[in-house]
Length: 258
Image (cartoon, rainbow, N blue to C red; front, top):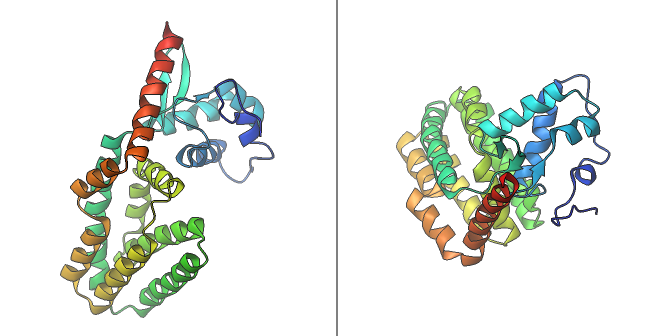
């Protein structure tokens, strides 16, 4: 795979074979592609993203590329440095903790409302089906599918609560959570069995129509923010990676400004 002079995989290589559809806005497609590359660390912290190069690779004008990058900046995934360029942002622990806080507060409301709708068997069947698929993914050690099903289950809580749009809003705040999750998987920090057990307790509480138990089970699943900090701090290799990347990208931008 081709890499640039910094050792990062080039945009050209990462986007090789990718084509844009005429059925969806160019901005949305470009944003989605770059978002995925960044949260999975294929585009690394500190790596430069050239608008001109992207326009050429996508055969698109600079306008949709620019708009996509602005969306990424709003999500905290890139830094636009005047007279220098656009760079993938370092992983920020503070932003991660904030995203966890937002998710916890919104999901508490979602599972409580879902428990109030426990009489609707359609949603309960959907939750059970997702859980079965998660068990199969864990047994197959398919981490990518396991994560996708995790997201699908949490989105189902919001649908059962009657507020599916709130999940879409929530997801836009979770970019740093997804980056940290990817790093944890890359460093083999996994807790699949615990996740399944937590999910079973949440689903069972919803089935019983017990909003208080559903909230309690969700809080135990996501964990207190202090617990997140302790977990990250306990893994020196992971925390050092995050901090090193952040410091490195800052130094890189400083050199480019000078």
